[in-house]
Amino acid sequence: MKSIEIKIECDAQPIILFTEILNGFLQRRQTSFNFDNLGFELTRIDCDHSAALAGKVIVRLYPSDAFLSFAGAIFARDFDFGAIKQV
Image (cartoon, rainbow, N blue to C red; front, side, top):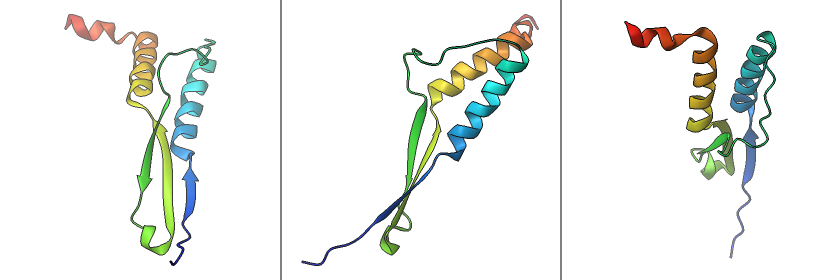
């Protein structure tokens, strides 16, 4: 039986960049927020198997849909996008 070695690489840059943008926005607004007990997952995982034959799988971490919606609600509240409903 031949063994196959697969290298797994993790790319967390998308989730790190998104959280840095959101955190910077909250700091500029002088709003503190605790992300500890949100009740939903912050990340989703995307696996790129295209290089698996070469022995490599790339795992990328992206903001989850729930986290994107949550951040959108924060931006909408601070920019008062509620006025759009009245048009």
